[in-house]
Length: 125
Image (cartoon, rainbow, N blue to C red; front, top):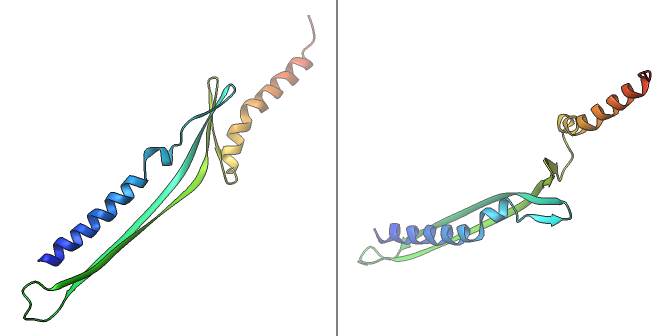
């Protein structure tokens, strides 16, 4: 039974240490003001851990010896940035944009160009 308590202790310590490293600010970073634009970094956090152990000793021992260990790791990868300028919020990925995202981002500029072209073609009254 003491082996179960030791494993619980190992797992509890590993989880406590990992949870202390990962905060909400790790995923959604602190906003950065750059003139009239606010930039918020966005990251992906992956973590994992392992623990194990066992009891060993002679059959005659009332309290067998325990040997065990635990380990963990964490990876933080930048995914992109949220930019806020006036009433416009935009997500800029670190890796290439998907074609549909690119089209949505280009739509306001494209509509403005079409509108300007139509205004030029109208006869002045």
